[in-house]
Length: 394
Image (cartoon, rainbow, N blue to C red; front, side, top):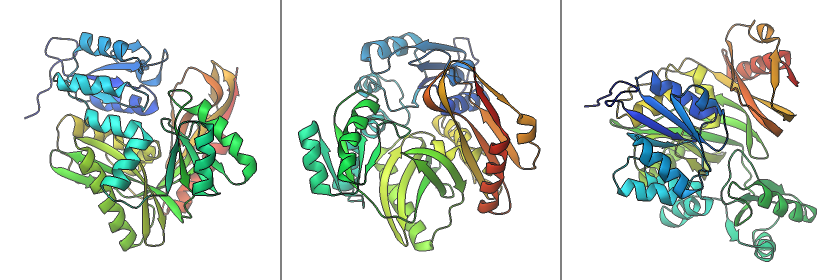
C-alpha cells in the first residue's frame, strides 16, 4: 500500500530530482498532484523544475561529495535522476545505505555511460546494434574510424540532447568530429564511441514503463533529429507487426536487465522488419513530450505513478499527434515570445514554454503540440503554429 504524507511536514513523501530541466519540471508537477514534496537539483540557478519545486539546490552533480551532502541533508523518499551528468557511483553508495534511486542506481550508472549500456545490450543481452569501437585519444579515434569505416557516427561516452555528436561523411569531417566530441561531452573531453552508420527507414522511441502491475509499452513514437537533438516527434509511428514485435522484445529485454520502476525511453532504428537497438534513457524522453497531447496520461504522469508504486492501468490514446521543438539561437538571459494568440487559434494546438533562464548558442526553449486525424496533418498543424510564433532575444 502506497503512503503519501503532507508536504513540508515530518510525514512528507519527498522526491529529489537530480536534473531540473523541462522534463524534470513536468515530473515535478505530476508528483505534486499526489502531494509529494519536490526538491530540485541542477547545475544552474532557476532551472525549469526549480521554478515549481518546494525548494532547490545548485551544485555540480558530478561532484560526489556535493551530491551526497544534499541527499543526506534532505533524506528523500525517492531520488529521481533526470539527466546523465550525475556522480552515479555516489548513487550506488547511497542505494546501499537504503536510499531509493529511480529506477535503480545500477540503471542510472549503466545508461549514463554509452560504453556500459552498449556492452550490456550487445555483449550480454545479444541485442542487434550498430558496429562500434571506443577511443580514449585522437590516435585511437583515427584507428576506430578506419575500422568502422566512413560514414560513421561519433559521440562522447557521456552527453545528452545531441551535444558532441556528429556524423563523419568524408575524411574532411574526421578532425571536426573529434573536436566536437571533446567539446560537447557532459564530463568534458574524454572517451568516445564510434558507431557504424545504420541505414534505416525511421527511428523510434518506445516508451516502456515498469510498474507495480508489470511492464507496459506505449505506442511507438517516430522522431526527426538534427545532430542528435530532437526537433519533431509524432505518435504513433506506423510499423509492420513484425517490426513492432521485435521492438517490444528489445525494449523488454533491456528494461528487465536494468530493473526498477519508472518509464524508459528505448531508442531504436527500423529498416523494414529489422530493428536495431540504439540507446535507452531510464527517465522520460524528450521525444515523448508528444504524449502531453496524445494520451490521457503523459509520460510524466506515468513516470510519477510508477515511481510512487502506483498502478498504471490501460492508457487512453487520444489520436494521431505531433510535437515540434522551439529551438532558439542567440546569447541572452532574456527571451520574449509573442503572437501566442495566433499560435493557439487553430483547434488541437497547445504550447509549452519552459522558462529556461539563459541561451548560449542554441537551446530548446519550448514545444508546440498538435493533434489531428493523421500524423501527417498533426505535423503540418504544428509547423503552421510554429511559423506564427515570434521570438526575440533581448
